[in-house]
Length: 83
View 1: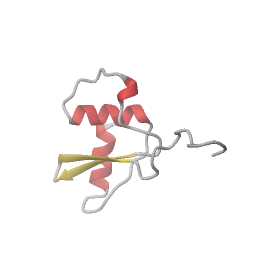
View 2: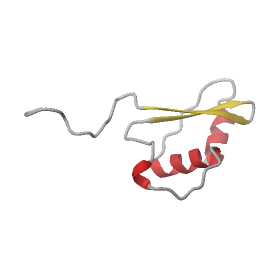
View 3: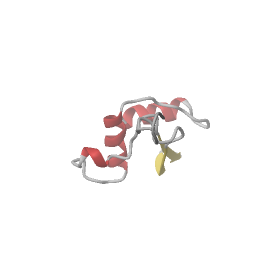
View 4: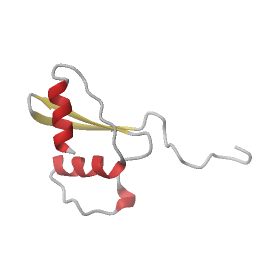
């Protein structure tokens, strides 16, 4: 996954690139960048449905990670009766 992210970075140098993936490849890339062990409890992943994980580069080095859920908690149960 990091190779795909780097290829997107190279192709879009000076601009932004978007890569679409499933949860596990994104989570593995994030854990690798954070220098965190890959084994973890899957229910504790910060990688919800319709979430965005951002890798920001300075040159060829990843300098920050970002995470947001622009659609809110997608897939959560609605509140209240009849909702």
